[in-house]
Amino acid sequence: KTFTITHEAQRTAAKDQARTNTCWNFATASFMESEVARQGGKLIELSEVFGVRHAYPLKADAYLRVQGKATFWEGGNNHDAMDMLRRYGAVPKTNYSGLKEGETRLDHAELAATSKAFLDAVIKSGRPSKSWRAAFEGILDAYIGKPPANFIYEGKLHTPQTFRDQVLKLNPEDYVEVTSFNHHPFYQRMRLEIPDNWSHDNRFLNVPIDDMERIMTNALSNGYTISWGGDTSEKGFNVKEGFAVLEDEAKEVTQNSRQEALDDWRSTDDHSMHIVGLSKDDKGNSFFLTKNSYGTTSGPFEGHLHMSKNYVRMKTIYFMVHKQAIPEDIRRKAGIK
Image (cartoon, rainbow, N blue to C red; front, side):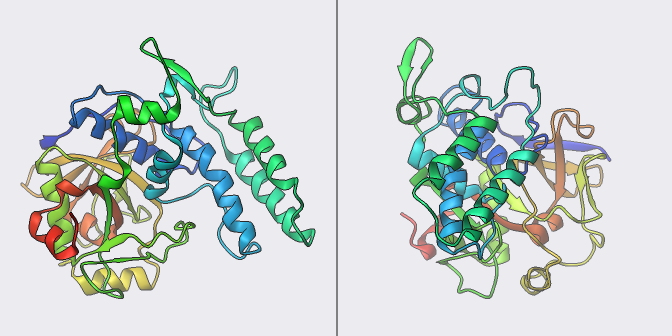
């Protein structure tokens, strides 16, 4: 397939999440990078593992509070990355890569297994001691390293918070996560009941499917990008060829068909990516230009792929966007100022 790009935003090169399941932060750090550039800042590569390192203890807390009756693993939702920005700030990649000496690619397989086993052992012991938190932090420091308390950026000393406020100038309150399912009322906020929503975030804005598509197209046509979470388990999700289509592209995707696929688990929250533009194939069909996190050598388009309009309508579980990218009539209905 050949594609013609009609709109594309500034972004860094595709990253490689390697042996980690932290796509939520790869997609959203990339989204933040583009947001900084869109607002007139420099295109700065941000540390993905900074958010991951800070999310782990919060997840551990949540897991122990419900005595292990929840999901604990590396995965998360894109709002987690924004929440880490809100709580802890951000750091350039050069200052915190998460790689140990001699390593060239991230590998969190052992960390994920060890941290879960540790927490399950704490739960099994019957009553958490006062020491488990320090021990857990020790595991994280051993595998990922201590996050920097301060660092020099362009000759100036910064903390992660001053870097967020003075250099990136990103305000986490400006971002909205959007979804479209009819088991909740439209134009209201809701909790999306998916396993990776470990924080029980209930701020997802629920809109009808056509409004969901309209928000996305409006954003991408106007220089905004999208931090996307959705289903990539379809046969038609073809990284090697660089595109994603539904098996039956001719069939109309409706609100009901979308809902049924969520309810019977055909649509699951598998992967997060960064949608950076719009494109058309050689037949004039609309596609969404998407930056993946499997490295620049995955597929023919330097780590990017093109998702068809129908694929996006059916397989988007949610996405994050700047509130100004939402058309005004939808903002009004949803009470977004």
